[in-house]
Image (cartoon, rainbow, N blue to C red):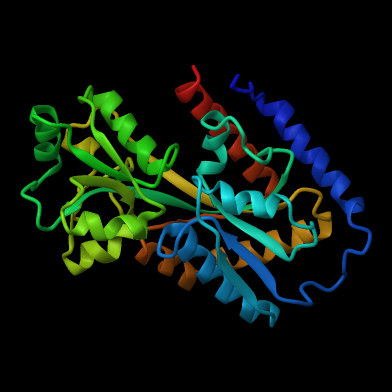
Length: 324
């Protein structure tokens, strides 16, 4: 596949044009919204950051709207299955997607995406940033980040690492670490989601994983997993005692993912505004922000335009790394 060359200005114009046209795209857009249950599609298994965020926001929106928000997990193919479902949905505001960084990565890894990331979706708002953490089983003899790196370098057979499939943040975070620290080849063990990987990781059948802190956090707190380092530039407020990879000698290694809400393209502008305002209102609630922090996430909203620009920048960043 010849990777498309995304121009930030041109791509933004495409999204903005879609937003302007959306006001006329659905003739019967309702003035009162919502008047029926809203389906919130999560393209991963239960337990990961996207799932946790969708369920938290869905619960708050149910109270705000006095209307049901139904969380529907549609995992598979590095989140393509769920995203494709939403891309084909009718743009009436009753089908939403809780997406993650794969939205900006998959175009450069897959030859046959069943949707166009820019043309087939309407950005609503960024919802959060996702710090990652390097973890091993509590049963592992690996005691520190430096110890893990040394063992990867000296292993007689390649060490194994968990991921959630080709192009997943877990895979790219590990490949980036290997690239920056000049590590030897390792063996990837793919799973359908973080929660699917945890049993093998906890049982020490997989050597390590660079996983969302939100997903591994409960197992770290329970003592089933041992955290070695966070991959953000700063320490995380939920685990202040856990040093960063940078602090432990990882050469400029910084990695974080993100999440946000999309709707099908051509969603009426009035519904884009309503969804954006309502979700951002929840994200700015101090109690909700504390809940995000307790899960190892950073709550962060945005305007639709800001979110669109952010995704374009992410696409350009990953294109430069994957398809230089």
